[in-house]
Image (cartoon, rainbow, N blue to C red):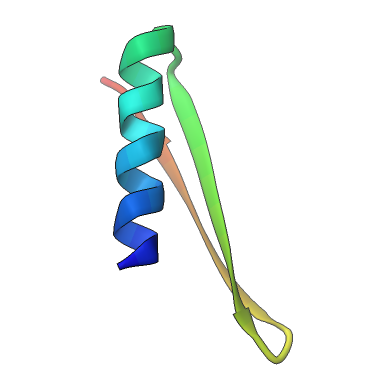
Length: 41
Protein backbone atom coordinates (compact mmCIF):
# COMPACT_ATOMS: atom_id res chain seq x y z
CA UNK A 1 0.00 0.00 0.00
CA UNK A 2 2.86 2.42 0.65
CA UNK A 3 4.02 2.13 -2.98
CA UNK A 4 0.57 3.06 -4.25
CA UNK A 5 0.45 6.03 -1.88
CA UNK A 6 3.89 7.18 -3.00
CA UNK A 7 2.98 6.95 -6.71
CA UNK A 8 -0.35 8.72 -6.18
CA UNK A 9 1.33 11.55 -4.29
CA UNK A 10 3.92 11.92 -7.07
CA UNK A 11 1.23 12.03 -9.78
CA UNK A 12 -0.78 14.63 -7.85
CA UNK A 13 2.34 16.77 -7.38
CA UNK A 14 3.12 16.52 -11.11
CA UNK A 15 -0.32 17.91 -11.93
CA UNK A 16 -0.01 20.71 -9.35
CA UNK A 17 3.48 21.80 -10.37
CA UNK A 18 3.16 21.20 -14.10
CA UNK A 19 6.25 18.99 -14.03
CA UNK A 20 7.02 16.32 -16.59
CA UNK A 21 8.78 13.58 -14.62
CA UNK A 22 8.61 12.16 -11.12
CA UNK A 23 10.98 9.62 -9.57
CA UNK A 24 9.72 7.27 -6.85
CA UNK A 25 12.15 5.07 -4.93
CA UNK A 26 11.57 2.58 -2.13
CA UNK A 27 13.86 0.51 0.06
CA UNK A 28 12.83 -3.14 0.22
CA UNK A 29 15.50 -4.17 2.71
CA UNK A 30 18.57 -6.44 2.71
CA UNK A 31 20.25 -4.29 0.05
CA UNK A 32 17.30 -4.33 -2.36
CA UNK A 33 15.22 -1.49 -3.70
CA UNK A 34 12.84 -0.48 -6.44
CA UNK A 35 12.43 2.67 -8.50
CA UNK A 36 9.95 3.97 -11.07
CA UNK A 37 9.96 7.08 -13.24
CA UNK A 38 6.53 8.55 -14.00
CA UNK A 39 6.00 10.84 -17.00
CA UNK A 40 3.08 13.22 -17.39
CA UNK A 41 1.89 13.16 -21.01
